[in-house]
Image (tube, rainbow, N blue to C red):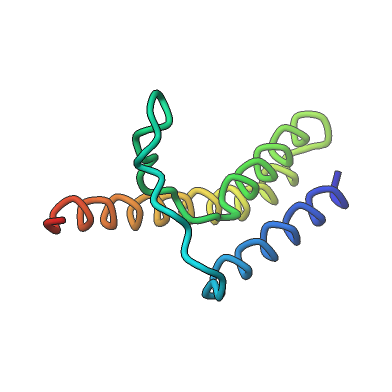
Length: 106
């Protein structure tokens, strides 16, 4: 499980770094000419973050404390707090960016 989480974290980091690079290809065509359920834009997508993974790891470690003792519950505090705070900060930045996009005239 630790190896799988490490591989997943490395893949997410690689994807995040790739998303930061400016695209040198041709611009994508505007897809507003579609009809049906695909005619509306999906809007803003949140940036990738490790926060859900950190919270999940913290919860897994905390659940292991039921079988192996309270010292694992103490060890679970760090990933739980850092993941929860990171997730909240990301949500706040996303909400602020959405409000900023909605308030600017098109």
